[in-house]
Image (cartoon, rainbow, N blue to C red; front, side):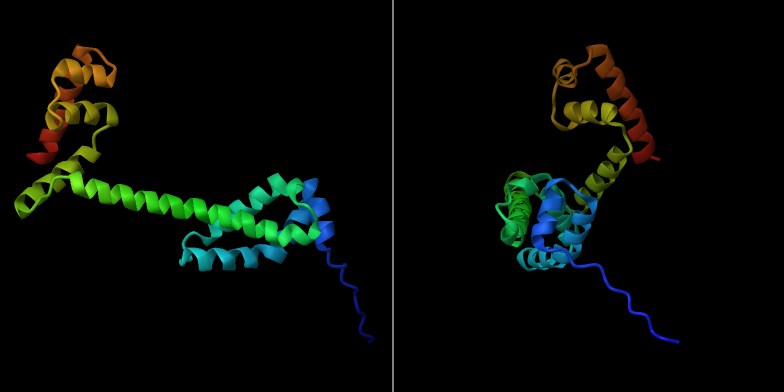
Length: 182
C-alpha cells in the first residue's frame, strides 16, 4: 500500500492575514491568533510579572486588533501593532494596580486603628451581620448609627421619606439584633 501525501494548505502571509482582519474574516482572525497569541502572552507575562491576567490581556488585545485592524499601515507592521496594543492593555492594568495601591495607602492613613482584640472581634461580627442586610436596610442603618447622621439627613441621603427611613432602620435593627444577640 502506497503512502499518500496530503498537501497542507498554504500558510497565510501577514499581508493575507491583515487583508482578512480588515474585513473581519473569521479565518484570518483565527490564523492571526494562532500565529501571534503566544507572542502576546509572553510579552504580557514578562511585563506583568504574573500569569494571573495574561489570558485576559491576550483576549483584549485580539478583540482590539479586530476592531482596529484597518489602522495598520502594512503587513510588516502587524507584529509591532500587536505589541503596541499589548503595551497599552498592560499599561491600563498597571495603572489600575498603582491607583489601587495608592488608594489603599491613603485609606490606611485615615481608617481608624483597632488594637483591642475584643473590639476587633465585635466589629468583625458586626460586619458579618451587616453583609446579610439588603442595601436598602444597611445604608440607612449605617448612616444613622455609624456615621451619626440624624434621621432627616439620613432620609435625604437615601432619597426616601422620613417615615421610610425610620422603618428601614427599625427593620435593620430587628434583623441585626437577631444575628448579634442570639
